[in-house]
Length: 369
Ligand SMILES: *[C@@H]1O[C@H](CO)[C@@H](O)[C@H](O)[C@H]1NC(C)=O
Ligand SMILES: *[C@@H]1O[C@H](CO)[C@@H](O)[C@H](O)[C@H]1NC(C)=O
Ligand SMILES: *[C@@H]1O[C@H](CO)[C@@H](O)[C@H](O)[C@H]1NC(C)=O
Ligand SMILES: *[C@@H]1O[C@H](CO)[C@@H](O)[C@H](O)[C@H]1NC(C)=O
Ligand SMILES: *[C@@H]1O[C@H](CO)[C@@H](O)[C@H](O)[C@H]1NC(C)=O
Image: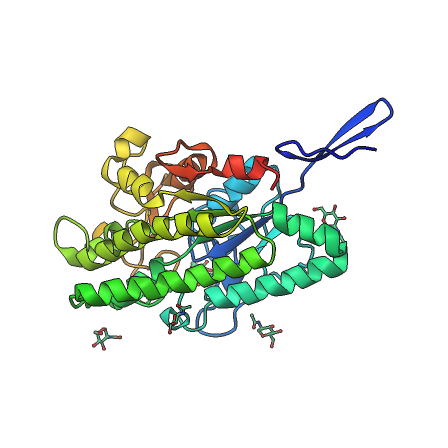
């Protein structure tokens, strides 16, 4: 029996005349905020606990909203589908403990920094859950199989947006409805220092996942925060909130440098950085080019641009709900629709180098590490 390494194939087993290509099993681990949360916050106990209610989920999950902050599927759902994996489950889902396909740690409202939104699963806490998962995998699959799974796995990160919202908009957990958009101008020294703190916390978590065996990483840049419906509200008739946009761009530029440095210093570290900011900005600004009818106003919510987080909440003020979310880029005040997520996922999966690189998701899933 001969084992041979071929890209995308863990080992080719040759046994007399039988040739059996053994495809790598590639688990998918997800770290993030509301853009990637598949339902963890349903199971929190404190202030960040959410209840899933329609119209969230209506497009795909129908009567059973899952805790995703979207009318349907989010990016990890599409990527899992393209990678021939089932929907990746939230870590906190009761009774779930078979991690061979991966697990989702993302938490709506969560930041890279713990102080951004108390009560959510901030990044270091997500990392501590990941460490529990690796222990469980070792018990269940044995040391060597677990090590192989962790090395083959793809790790997706999308975080930072809430950290910048928190300082620039004085808004904690916007996805949970606490909007206090009384902003005050931030000095450029503060912005720079803050971005350094956020990125160095992110870097330390990446290094720990790498130390656990992780080699294949995907990152989304922080989105166009200033131009979300929630942030257009306070900024007059046109345009986007300023400070938070500056912070998002600073973060994204610095992130690409940090990743290139990690690639130089960590042997075998492979990554793809997806320019989520530009991809979502283009759709917001030129909706019709991408098949949408509305790029600025959310499908669900109230106030200017439907930028208030009232979607799905009963109360004295009813919220507006569009009849066809597929025509909208934004589902609620800060989260894209399933249709927008599908387009973004297609770019992350197989997009060209100017959008995602050096590897796209498909290349990382196909490569044996
Ligand atoms: C929430 O509380 C329940 C009951 O005390 C407990 O079993 C569960 O672990 C808690 N969840 C989290 C995420 O801490
Ligand atoms: C875990 O799930 C996979 C399929 O995703 C299955 O093949 C495997 O047998 C399961 N392991 C355990 C211990 O249940
Ligand atoms: C909103 O933010 C401002 C500025 O930080 C603060 O003074 C005010 O107390 C906040 N209001 C609420 C309701 O949290
Ligand atoms: C992480 O952020 C905290 C603030 O929450 C900061 O004090 C600390 O220095 C940062 N850690 C790293 C490794 O940069
Ligand atoms: C909102 O009101 C509708 C109609 O009264 C009711 O069916 C639904 O359960 C309520 N949803 C929540 C989250 O309270």
